[in-house]
Image (cartoon, rainbow, N blue to C red; front, side):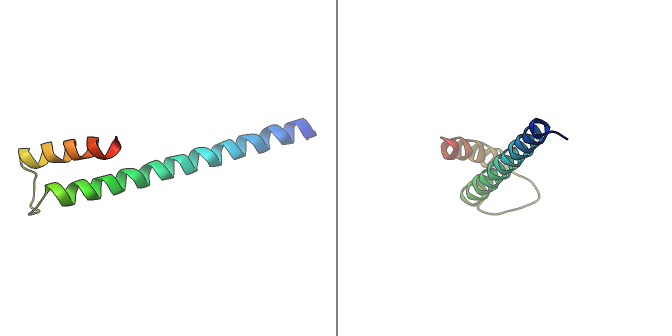
Length: 66
């Protein structure tokens, strides 16, 4: 394996790691938003969500995202 091949593979691995970290960070953000929205919009958890709870979660999510 020549040095250019090694450099290309090394760069590809670095890019894959960056992508995995970005995906993990995005998932953590989504989880935090979901937790906050659920806590604020679902006062009494049950087997399903009411329409006002669904709307509240959507509105709260959009507010949290920006």
